[in-house]
Length: 445
Image (cartoon, rainbow, N blue to C red; front, side):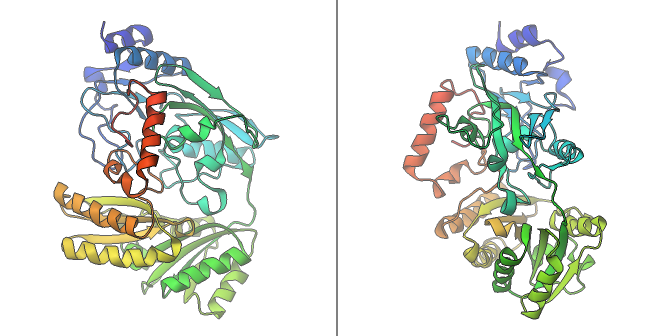
């Protein structure tokens, strides 16, 4: 009996989809648009036991398995090759418990982030992990990529908000350590090893996420600035004067194409969205204006106003829906970020005159995003863009991925950010936890 037949016999046809049943359900690609192949079969387990059974069977048959979440990644990490089986966590969803004493929630891996956020808020708490793709990304994928997002500057990445974890190894063994304690110093930290491993070491099935009190006095403003030096000055002032929860920078090119004229008639060289807690935003902005750091500012008077600001930053408006976009997600020393932008923009223009580049990011936590509009996205031109972006990152002491992981699209550039010794250690870990190499093969390494 082959792997698919054994899976169907063990789990049933409603859990193991093949052939015509894949149509309209299985996805060829994550949000990078680079996937081309449907899986040999799509597994939709409804329980941890189902995941364990499925992986045990696939391990015995040496059948490659690609874990999939909400498919919002941009690194090709959830894409299948011909002959791969996809394992979707979409049915393994729901908030199991909110523990108000521990300040924690137990949630299944297929739960959409926004669903978990809403459940936390209804219980009087904040789930601080927040991404633009909150309405479709899943908790398991957030953990697998160690997602960052909009509020890392205050609350950290997923790792900083992950107290406990349950995951299934390649051979079907369930590793369950659903701790609710902030202090847990009991040997090797498998939780933080699996977080960020992109489904190459184990499949996340449940997690305990840290909750925070609902913040009071959330205020949002969008500021116009004339220079990157002013951006750095504003960030330094904010860290001294307010409780900063978000600091999002948009260079003029991105701000304009994403609808900036709805906010300022004259597009400034830089626009910054500042979000604070505690009700001290207006005195802070008054100081910034008096000191000449900010040339203009709009303060949200309602949640609708704040949403209007964030729509520009998140590229949610119609004018931001550009075709043929290549995306980059990098981390750089904050002081060098504008130097990087200038050099990268110039090199792209010289190498690919038909391309248009746009820059923005969570600069407060060193993360820069680049969108390059390149008609037709020819493979040779995309590779040229990769070399421009990643060679500059290496030269400036940055890293090639801040939020979306390595997947396949950054695999060949991982050596720009990791040493030979580090890569060897990663390979040793992979070989130890997945000796048959069935979990998300070809990703990361």
